[in-house]
Image (cartoon, rainbow, N blue to C red; front, side, top):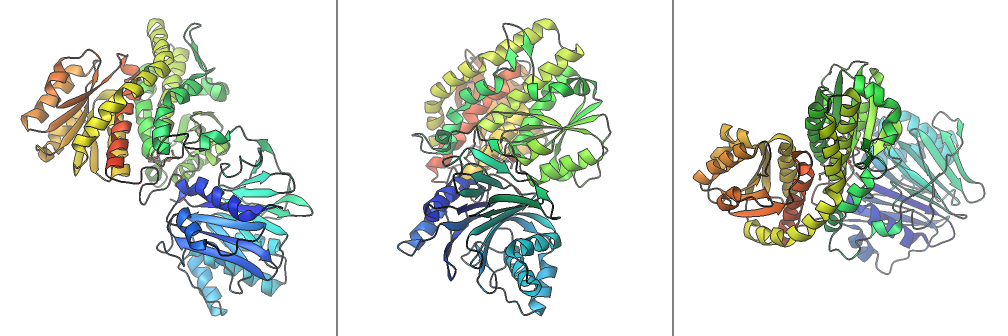
Length: 615
Ligand code: F6R
């Protein structure tokens, strides 16, 4: 939710900020703005409703002088997306400019108090209140910008990542964070601020991930200094980025989503590397190795996540209960944190998150931690908040996912959960040796099977997309561990093509959704060979009897469903265990092509943001 950037150095700040904002646009894209410090009397501040490109067009030939600056791309919380609510925001005297990602919960009370003191506000945002508060403290207390920011941050409640510049201290840029992420990049006599490392990696690999309630003060003379909001000096912990620049580009694909779909064989290979070996017959997850015993002895595993990551968690429930025989509960983080759940010390709580920054998931994890449970993470973004607050965790290694609709993050999450289930099952002796061996062989074959599947099915998916692109509703059905894939298929279609879609366990259809079926309604069914095959065939018969259009995912060699279905896509023959990963691919591709054909913005669907850092 919202992306922020900042720069101080000898280079021109404008192109760095604009490029940075484009990289962060996945975090919000309803308005954008920048402020460039030209000199002690002049800040060039431009902001505009719309995308970063709209901002660039709006700026046109205006002055972009300045080698200190801040920028913002917004996902609206307080006030609609318009030019006025866009960031940066000025203090009342227009001497301080600030960008903010997060929510100041007590902004109303502060605003009222400031209005009584004579402040006037132009926007509806909580951010404008914060910058006025800083100004007020500075003017009335006669303190430095850094001290005014520190005092102000002690007065606000909620979440923030901010970057601030001031005409009065033109050789400084100050950033701070609580609950929203902020990274500082350390170049040669230059410093970068950003919500994640993607705007920074092009210039330097040395970064500091700020911790909550830390303030980073950069000044040209003395470089970087970090203090806490309680005014204690903190020594910066400099880490080296492993990210490469190429992964942030589209690399010849029309959209990041398509690129990321095609990256899945590589992503899963990276996810399996060093963690599973069929020849030697082992599975080992280094990141949680020290917690293996604790997990194996857990009375219960609770998985918390949101959206697509929650769907991966549901597949994990099937895997872990089947192979390791430990009860698993999969919880929406937003519900879990507010419903007074029973959490015991011998519970193991696993958070799944691509971004590692989802506000509800973080809050739910903190709650579980306070109640004494062991908390683990399955996270994609290295160095993200969840990866830092958990007792231990394991990275999915999918690489940066930029398309807002999650694809490779999902399939790598499912592969990790599969490995986790195999690892715990082996440790607890609840999986027979022969099955263990067979399943790790299946896992190892996944990248090759996925490669062939993506290549072969893309054309079929285009043909199917053409046929069903004008549908208003769609149903996705699956059984067993493919039920969550039906949910995920429906989510993918609705979020990028705006077609209403629902996922259901196939057998539940007759308890309600069957009423929706008519000859207009496409019904996507996972009907692969395996334990539930016969049952799914009966469900397809029920659909056909009501003239519904069936698009089936079938196993290569199948003849029964091939005959029954209106359209079909074949996936390679595989054990039921890995079918959820394979069956996901055609749903991703079909949704992608339908969205493209409907002229939707595939990588940045309306109203969505990649990183949901507000609750
Ligand atoms: C859908 C999607 C979202 C995310 C959800 C959780 O394609 O991407 O549903 O899965 O917002 O985000 P993370 O995994 O970053 O916690």
